[in-house]
Length: 192
Ligand code: GRF
Image: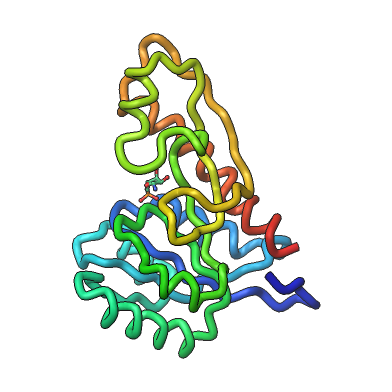
């Protein structure tokens, strides 16, 4: 990714499917002078995503693209990204897998947050699997997106301890807290 020059912020799109707590957090950090990005577009694959409320709250444009017909959806998304001059995509709880064609076209400028210490527990239900396997630690990872699921180069990772009392729910809550710390930090790291 190109280095920043001057006070200009890199225009970013955040892709969501659900609650959008990471989206909200990324927007909050983007307002700080020393965070080199702005959130200019929100994309969701469903109009049921609760996180869409942040579009109205912050006055950020949103687009809903079902992503059922991949080729068509790719084209639509690429059109909107171009229109808004988006240079970086942040996936934040986006439950669809982007096509390899799309990943290629966006020249590697796509990052994702995953709630595990990658390469462990790629894919869904990472918390349940970590607890079942008796892991002592879990955590989260921000990584570059490639066409292979949760497999691109790691940008930042942070650990949390799994206690004996933890359930998938309590662990998800703990991990989400540290997700909110490392996602904006990871963006800063790749852009500075
Ligand atoms: C987060 O745990 C993220 O790591 C995972 O999906 C969850 C999204 O949460 N990919 P939110 O919608 O940002 O609250």
